[in-house]
Image (cartoon, rainbow, N blue to C red):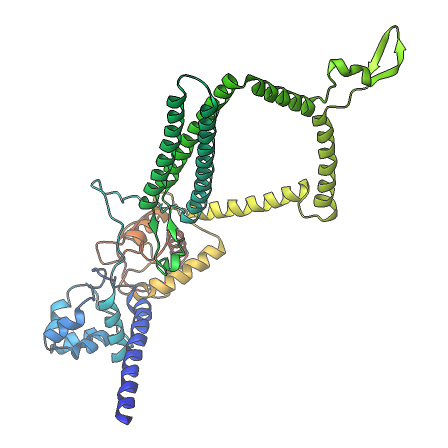
Length: 466
């Protein structure tokens, strides 16, 4: 039992050490190697992926640590064939690194385990394929419920009308009684079968989620695609058309058999509409609302106000009460000036976001010299994090050229400098487009042009006059 505990302890220590090394390796690479080495490709320094295995295969695994700590000394000793083989990769020697063997192992372990992010698939012309739009399944399911309920209601209405038509035909003493009865039944049965088939086909087309299959996306139990919603709308429209057609047929048949019933319904409907719109008294009953005064044989009727006008007046009273409580007493909504001020603040936020977004559109053709102290300070911080290993903190140059003298290889203009930093050069300077955004490149380029002259590395390039 004791041995088992010891084995587990050692196993946890090994796994924990490996995890820490992987995390420390990334931080160490960014702090000490990122300036000259790029992940997965050659840059100012060579690609480090598989380097440790290559040195071990050559029987010089231990010498790799000496190479990292002081490459110049290892080359001078002449004992490493690997060192002699790569000493001419760069015209300048690698800067000695103050790192331990464990830190070197962590860095190389991180580099070996690093994999590039998967790129979006591309079409034949080289452009990336469009991202597939995932339907809003929750919203679609809600719409599906409403459309299904509406369809069921229409199906019930169709069956009710079908039954009514059948009943009318049974009591109709016409020659084609049986034929009409059968036709009515066939209409109802056909519509019912079509509706049942529609629901069945929809059920087969839909995707059901098994318990726990939704995962982190929290999908509903039923996945309703946009095409399913469109199909349900078409079915509902068709069912509505059938329902209206059957209602029309029912009214025509009823008018043929019992015209007095139809006329009574029309009269009641007309009276109801008249009551709602005007509340006027029929002309034969106007004597009941005659007023007592008379002028030159003319008497006045005491008609009521139109109901729609009265209810409109009541609505304005209710609206006024709700308005005064909403805006002045409870203040749940903003008055015009408050709403305006909020809109102005929101617009200012949106303008700032737009300007920040547009700032990222700068490139070597639109770059401008920044003079604001905040931009220069930001450029200095970027320079210290990415450039000092080759150009020194004061810009006097070591592996890279002196950035403070008047000699320039690729041009001193802010646009030329932006392009050099962004794309790198053929003489060993790595590109920084993958590390810095356009605003940061513009900031560090502007900072470089503010460096005071310092004596350092011998001049490279030509003196470019303004």
